[in-house]
Length: 172
Image (tube, rainbow, N blue to C red; front, side, top):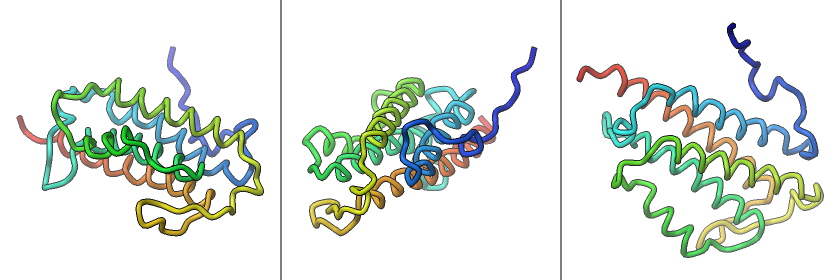
């Protein structure tokens, strides 16, 4: 018995309780989470720390997906980054110990679930509120931060796909 392939998340309809203006961001985050499983299906953990052509490792992309989403949610809430978040940021490129893909995927999925809970709690009027980003407090808005988190996830998913494809095709 074969499983029928589902359409992409954005073609499955609205996600209950998510404000209409945040549906695209929610769809992109959920799509990223789903595709991680497909991209990494046959990838051994050791391959996660391989570099090719001077580009970031698969492990970096996986950690960065979670870290950026976490940081953007923090800024959207009008909060400053914690010491733990700065530590996570510094360790996104770390390759020791060899990361486990299941743990990295689970961490991203947990952060996506946290984001969706946050989306559901938002008053739509707050989406255009100004928010400062980083130490320089560069200008953004709540909706700008949430959309950036979603598009950034998709961007790194694409980079991960290409990197893993090239690494898998490399002769041993």
